Image (cartoon, rainbow, N blue to C red; front, side, top):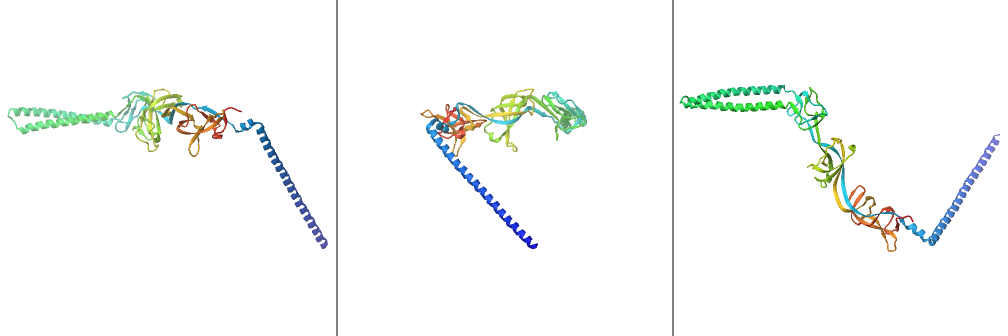
Length: 404
C-alpha cells in the first residue's frame, strides 16, 4: 500500500510538470504572433506615409496654388494714424467738504446744562449750540466786579484828599511830602483800578466760554452729547458735535510719491462718482507740502460744484491728466513684441510683384495707457499695422488679408 502511494505521487508530479511546460509554450507563441502583427502594421504605416508624401509632391507640381496657399498666412491689418495721446493717473478718492468743524469748548471741558440743536439741523455761524455749567464763573465775575467797585470808591476818596492837600499847599499850608504822598495814593489806586478792570474782562470772557457756538454755517452732522454729560469736544468714540458745510465740496485723494513731479496745481482731473452717477471735470487746487511717512504719498484736492446728491466721504474715482502728446502715433499695446535687443511690430508691405509680406519694424515706445501705447519712433502714419495673426509670422513671410 505504501509503495502504491509513492508511485501515485510520482505520476502526479510528472503530469503537473508536463502541464506547466505546455502553458509556457502557449504564452511564447502568443507574444511571437503579436510581434509579427506589430511589424506588419509598422511596415504598412511606413508605406502609407511614403505614399502620402509622394502624392503631395506630385500634387504640388501639378497645382502651384496649393503650395502657395500652404505658405501664406492670413492676418488682419489696421492703418496707422496719428491722434492726441493722453496719459492719466487713475486713483481712488472721496468727496469731502471744504469746511468741516469739530466743535470743542473754548475753555475747560464742562458739564452740559442745555442742548439747543439736534442732529441734521441747519445752524448758522455764531449760533448757540450748548450751555455749560457756569456757576463758578458767575461767582468769579461777581467777585471781580465787587473788587472793581471797591477800588473805584477808594480812588474817589484818594482824589478828593489829594485835591484838598494841593489847595493847602498852594496856600502855603502843609508839607511837600504830604502832597506827594496824596498824589502817589491816587496813582496807585488808578493802577489797581485798571488791573481790576482787566480781571473783570477775563472773568466775563470765561463766562462766554460756557456758551458753545458754531464757528461755521452748515448742518449738524453729529450731535452725540446730552444734558449732564461732560462736553470736551473730541472723545475716544469721535467728535461730540460735527458741523458740515456742504456749500463748498472737494474730492481728495492720496497720490504715490513717484508721481510727485508729474502732478501740479492746475492739472486737469476727470472725476467719476459711481454711486451718484456723476462725471465732472476739474483741476487740482491743492497739493500737500509733505510726503506721508506711512502711505508714502501726498494729498491732492480738486474742487467740485455743490450738488445735493453728493455727500462727504462718498467714493470717487479720479483720473489726473499727467501727460499729453499731440499728433502722436498710437497703436494697440498688444501688437508690440520683444526680443533680446528691441521691441518690434509687424507691418504689411507690398513687393514689386504685387505680393504682400510681413515686415518686422523696430519701434521706440513712449507712455502706455489702457490698451494704447505711444510710438515715438519706428512707425509713421499710413503704414498698415498687422493687428491679428502677428504672433505666428516671421519677417518676409507671405501674408494675406483675405481667405484664399
